[in-house]
Image (tube, rainbow, N blue to C red; front, top):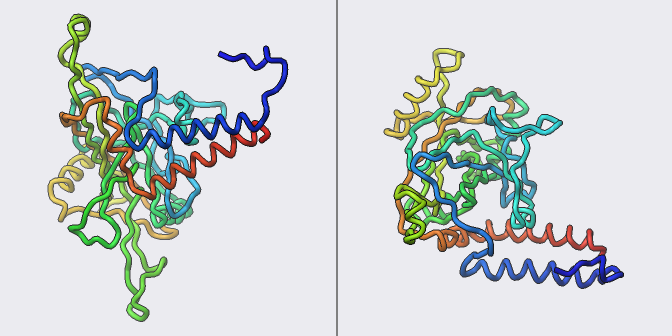
Length: 333
């Protein structure tokens, strides 16, 4: 490796710019067919082993300003390490996360390999009036929650715009914070911001695709047959209102789980949690996780992620551009 100090002079700023630009272009062009980074090896999990779910940020193609995941009214994990200011300490990040400007944090979701869970309660919290107004705005601006599992970003599906209820689906990174339903003005016939209903997504249905690795003779001596690899991370978010209309008290976890099971089994009976401007409310988050065996191999597990929608590619390009600009400022080019 070239030691800059041994050369005796500072390299030209233009050369640093060329190196950074070349590296970013190589990453972007190579992602069209496959993703391979030397030194990265698959992680094998035993049956029941804990898999850490990480969260990063909220992003939108309508508003380019990202927000932290924990700006949502969701509780932080009790065992998470804290910094001096009380904020959650981020997990270690790799070169790709540095280029994309991402940091990942521990999540309150607990996964165990090949162990399904149904309607697990995360926590309940109260949302103040000013927080409700801010949250409603982020739902309207279509912010998405970014998560990852074993290095795999969370991918969800949604209908293409103006395609109808039976139209084709597109894949996007993350899950929406909430949904917006337009209420049309009887006079103008057009929807308006003040006449739209926003609903907060409070139940997350995760699906983890797993694959059994093909073990060689030497590996079979040290590894058990019940070893799995994560080859996909899917998710779907829904709005569930677990509040008790007859009481202002928070329901017990058992009652919440009972309601969640009833909502998921029969969507017609589901209550939606509406977020109104300046109106405080209580929210409870729940999640389910299901493991599914897949024929996808570990070497090709990124193919689905690389086929995200054009809006998501635009966000990735903007993050790369920000990193390139920062590199230029640091090198003095």
